Amino acid sequence: MNVSNTQYRLYQFFFLLAGLLFFTTFLGSVHLFDWDEVNFAESAREMLVTGNFTQVQINYRPFWEKPPLFFWLQSVSMSIFGINAFAARLPNAIFGVITLLTFLRIGTRKYSLQMGFWWAMAYLGSFLPFMYFKSGIIDPVFNYFIFLGVYYLAETIENPSNRKAILAGIFTGLAVLTKGPVGFLLILLTFLAFWISERFRKIATWQVVVLYALATALVSSAWFAVELWRGGWWFFKMFIEYQIRLFSTPDAGHEQPFFYHFVVVFLGCFPMSVFALWGFRKNPKDESPVFHKKMLFLFWVVMILFSIVKTKIVHYSSMAYFPLSFFAARAITQFVVQNSIPKRFEWFLGVLGGIFALILTALPLFAYYKENFYAYIDDTFAVDCLKTPVKWGGWEFLIGFLYGVAVFWAVWKIKKQVAKASITLFGASTLVITTYLAIVVPLIEQYSQAPAIEFYKMLRRESPNSYVTTVWFKSYAHYFYFQYPRYQNPNFYQKETYQENTEWLLNGNIDKDAYFVVKTDELHRFQQTYPHITMLYQKGGFAFFKREAHEPPRSED
Image (cartoon, rainbow, N blue to C red; front, side, top):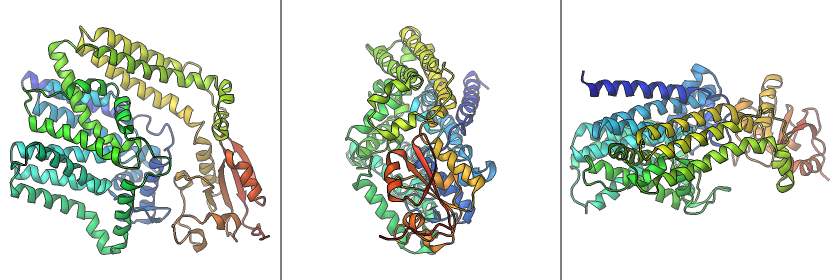
């Protein structure tokens, strides 16, 4: 075995170990967050409860927003590790390790061992990409399949191969099974953008196109065809209508300006986003120009498409992290070979890194001295949340401070020691995110959703044969943490919306005790509207109520 292969194996072992260490530890240190994390985990839990693994459900009613592949992964994890946050997040952690090893392999194969190393290192050591592998949302798995679909299509164009065309179709089909038609759409638009740039010259044979299309159709039909045969067209009608509504109508609270995703990607993907600014530039000596163009078009397709989409949520643009990390790795590799950096580069790193260090330092300090800020917060719910008693150690601000020291050391050294400074920068980012997620985020969560989730978990232990719901705010947390049973009383569900019939629980002739969670800014309104319901207690930004089953319905005036 030559030196290069020995180094490659060492890098493989390093990223395997680093991925397992950083992605799988502390996965359950904080509860799943509303909405998406809890929503998806609940769908997986209900698959286990019902044994229905083909139709995604929420509250035991059809949930037509997503196909089932990711929920299958979560269900397998939960069947092994139990119904908890760790199991819900584990599939993404595993895909995080696989992603790092994939970047190392493809970067080494197409460019150099150094390129492969920096590609994996940049992704491991950047904020949002790292955090997503510690989450329970669909996108990390979806993005991986999209990336491989684009990669094998680029390979097929450079070196025509039926095998690679089939692999591209398989991974495209898996993307569709993970998140729906948008998986095929992103790859199709990337392919079309590349074809236009080539002035519509022939870039693939009809045989390759047919094989790709057949593989995509066969894999995606593993679910679509079965569900069509079982349930008919109504489910797909609702599924397609949701996809159209997602693109054309903004969800409440998610109306953002056109440039929203550009800001999120640039700031959230620090430090690799700063390097990528120089990696976008065309290199005439590029060993794989087709792959470079595919990455470029994939980035812009994602950024433009989701800037046009009316509903704008942070993770919608997460597919852009993959090509962004590629361009970052290209830039770092070039800087390391030349052992020099462009003018003003260190200023970009210093300013953006300083902002992150300041935020990470300021958050614990704000919590220590929160009483001084109550008068400036015009939000009853927010103030009540901050009044939740949380025990801080008093030293947590040092995490952000030490990160700032590491950033500025890297900025100081990067002109003369590019490789050493870059490793320090990405390594420090990895360590600070891990430490923050393990220590600080659980404390911050106690100010937000923790009081409500602890209430649901208490009810699951002490009063499992009851109803529980939220009033005047949307949440999925009570489904998962109370572990909703499949209620048999037909009055519990609204026929039109398939949601729980809150009005019946509040005023109807209920057969079990009912518990209600209300935000404190609606507390007085709730008490005035439903005086027959007993308040149990208030904690943080939530108030908790109980209506006993023997209580008569409220009389009409």
